[in-house]
Image 1 (cartoon, rainbow, N blue to C red):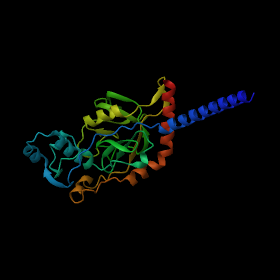
Image 2: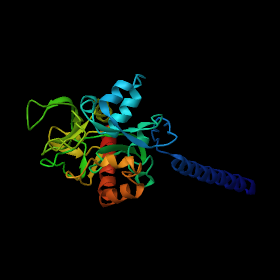
Image 3: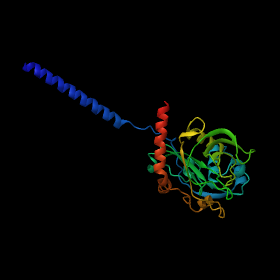
Image 4: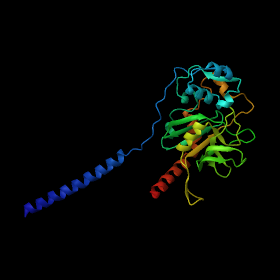
Length: 295
């Protein structure tokens, strides 16, 4: 009788311990679950970032290296495409062009405040640049030409909506827009490839060089629809911030005397994001739920 009771007690104890171990393993598995964050390509930092004035035509003639990376850096710094750059008189040229393009543009490489945001895009009106972040890590950055004084780009929080490899403008059917990604459906505002003259000149859209527009076209997420009209979840959040002084010299000319004159700090990114953070995270959770339900 005592032996039977002892066996039963041992059996129950083993079952209880097995149950506890299973719970502990389950908890550890949940704790160890990590979000896989895409890392950017390792960047080459230049020894120093300083600038000098030059004549665009003379520089193009003198540059016999055929190094396209150098030209891309210079175009980005002057917020222009090659066609517009070739017509410019005075441009700014970095003295050291061995670095990654991110070191010549104002956005910070890492913003810990954005760690919980899967993807987000920023457009800076004052510096005419944009940046794409994943969980606070800068993935991509480049120049932009935003809305003109007469047709300013709206600022605030938007979301990437729909995209098209090629479409026509709602303002002028002769304007062909490549790699278009809409962020304001009613007003027809979006980023896309178009000429960059080196200053804000668009009809409220956010112009990019073609390689940049193509990258962002593939990188950002569209909205999720039910049918053709009902929005189930928004796409990648987009924050457009700041203002441009159209009556002053081009702001990047300040880099000649102060290479950090246009720097956008982590604190500024936090300041621009904070008013929208709750909404962004709520939309992100909503999107994850909708995406999971569709699987």
